[in-house]
Length: 388
Image (tube, rainbow, N blue to C red):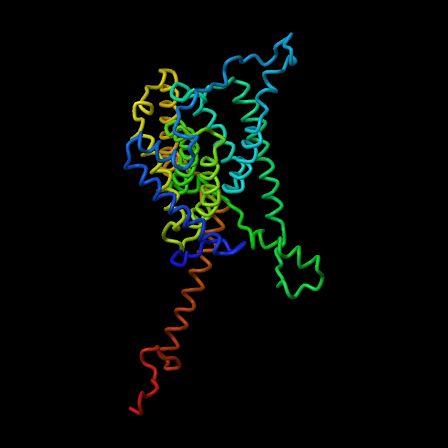
């Protein structure tokens, strides 16, 4: 911690964010150690942390009965829906609330939510727990849990954007209630920066936003692939510990990335951005090394075709937006276009008047020089330098 640099945040204390950085470094070292093991040794190593681990997980799917309305069901006609209302509903809601606080953009978070649901559809053939009913994907996850968490996050951001930040020292507050409130306020932001990503402003920002979204989705997928390969059940403390490390680290990394894009004096990524990128990449390498056949399972034809079309559309739109449109479709403002008859005559009259006045001044200046009443700057007597 003594060798780490301070990050962009001051609350509750810079040392806290140094600790987050150091935990990320330790986690990255642990990932590198696991990367150089065999899959059996990696599972044994995880078993040392908890003797209950190291056993194959039972494959679980959530698409056994996808009927939303089941008349005559002993638990009610909407029993299939209410069965899915478990702890993971709260985890989805809270997770997307945190992501909204991290990204600070409503539409980017909505695209991330939509993209992950599409990824679950696309990867059902690899992981069984990605298989869900249509209403589980779009009603419970996308519309209810994810969107509600994003909306609550947006309301929180609006409050933080309009809040006035006036800080007083603890010993300058007279009342005990004020002192207690000041202690709790130490865990709130010192100031707040509103993010305006402006992804279409330039090609650099467009590619940066796409890269950020891809890193978010890959980190989310790593959670499912790692627990499947290393035989770690979802509610285990290892999964929660990983999320507790990634969450605060992502807050700092996104803040550093935004500063790199927005501040022209910032010429490099922050240290937390590099560390969290290395963590995500190392997790991908572990998944590919330990179970490459799983990752290389071919996509169904219709899924592969849809992703190919989406990729081509993305590339074509990028080329059109940043290369073709500025060259051929940029509209010139009306005052820069071809002038009207009245504008032409007015400009001609103004230019004629200006030329006549300029010629008169030139003649007057030349006449004054010829009479000796005015001398050019080069012929004027200059002040002696050093008495010479």
